Length: 528
Image 1 (cartoon, rainbow, N blue to C red):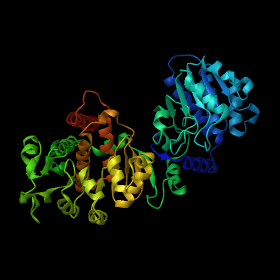
Image 2 (image 1 turned 90 degrees about the vertical axis):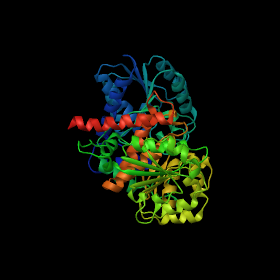
Image 3 (image 1 turned 135 degrees about the vertical axis):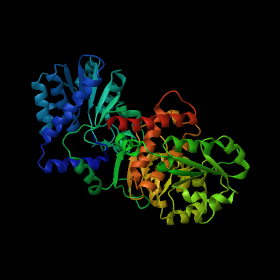
Image 4 (image 1 turned 180 degrees about the horizontal axis):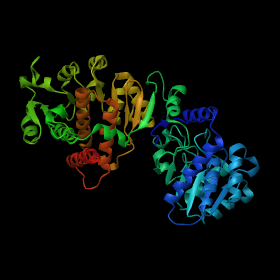
């Protein structure tokens, strides 16, 4: 299964290279049609007529190919054509003729005089397939195409879009005048950014697995280097690769635990946070670290909140900031740390201590108030950029806006560009939280998290994630694990836990995370 995310131009390049290497464009279209037909059969609510609305180009060709495959399974199909049959050419024309020969009804809706054919057949459909425009759409829809989209959207039938909802920009998620509101979208060969950017999530529906049509994964990977991404600019790191977080990452992050394991093997995480009114944040971060599998967790908090934090942290060791034992040069307790998390509930009066942490040669995760202090202090920014050790920033859109000195609306308008800019400007890994969290490396590798839900919009869920990521950094330090895999696994697991029912408090979320993580470890044990 492909997990690659490509721009429209990169996808066209991969398609072209595959055909130039000897693959048949007709065969690629045929495979896409078979995948679409399988998706229709899996998703149609009842046996009945499938109406495929076709436009020009390859997207329409995929629709014709799907029609022939559906007819071989004795499913009634009507192809409502928004372009004249005589305007078709090449592989699209060949598949149109095959669909007609297989018994699919071809109905002309290419002119105003016969446009009512579209609505007549939509009313007869049990399912509609949108094969009007694909990723190559470069201009806003107008005229009859806008009217066709409106009729599809008002037909009250489940809609499957091929590759991307017609009218949706494949790169930005912008609606080009009008767009089909799909219930399902089946990506062809690879995923496109438009599903998640801009208005894309409102029009893409449920994303199905990408259809394998014969374009090699190596070709998809080469496309990133061959065609520059539109988000690249002087301020942003060049996009080197893009994929979404998947189950294999979690399998690598949480292998079976050996019978002889002890807590020292699973990472020591130190958390700096807490202030008056915000004593729960470091506690939740410690629960997140433990839920993700950390062996030992220590919390360092200001003296005035030490009694409260200590009394509510049975699982973590808690130290007051004024206690010098944890920070002695050479033999302090913190020298045992495998990773450090700084910022949850910390307040913005800890710049001196933050500067000390930035100088330590340990993996460091900066969250919440640590990010706010960096955003307002050029000396801290300089220290951050000069760090040689692994560093991760975990901003939400407001914190990202402060770090980039822009508005939240600018961040949200192009989250991919924003995360790349942060990674380049601060020379570290960045986890840009929000709907479809993005992770970027300093060298321009981007991962997108497709899981999560609005349940995560609750105080403390980000603190739990900070602790989880801290545990992953500890494993990177101890075991030289792949940083991208470990960060992606934690973000993915956090998102999956957020989708689960039965919780509404961040402390309960940590328990769900622990259950999912243990299930992954047990699955490996059962497989063995």
